Amino acid sequence: RRDVLAFVKEKKGVVTRLLDYIMLSKPQDIERYIQLLEELLSDGSVPGTIQGAVRCSMPKLRRRAKVQEEKDRAEAHRLQAGVVGKKGTTESEDPMAELRAKIAGNAARRSEAMRIALEQEAANEPRTRPSSSRPKAAKRKKV
Image (tube, rainbow, N blue to C red; front, side, top):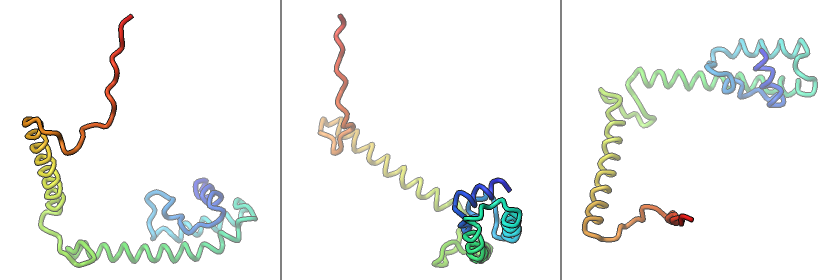
């Protein structure tokens, strides 16, 4: 209750993003939050200067929750059907296979870059990319 009231005051009554603010909230919780907002309005907890903004933004909050619920339902349906992206690519048997392939590719590129750098250093050739642009620290004289 206090957190919702703080949000209402902070946002000057515009509550359309209330579900984003409340951790672990779901679009299905919207009626409970609307009821809480109406209680806050009726008991005078919400300052009179922003009550109009709260009342105007509550329908937008409901619409936003409905849209989010539809997106969640569509995503759940896609996952259930084994479809990953919007283009309809199917999920492989191992969902981590793509990630492992990207990691392996990055490791191979780094390994190749290191091999080239070591070969250049061994041949006393200048490196194609300087290792550091920091100036070396001057040695201090002992007094």
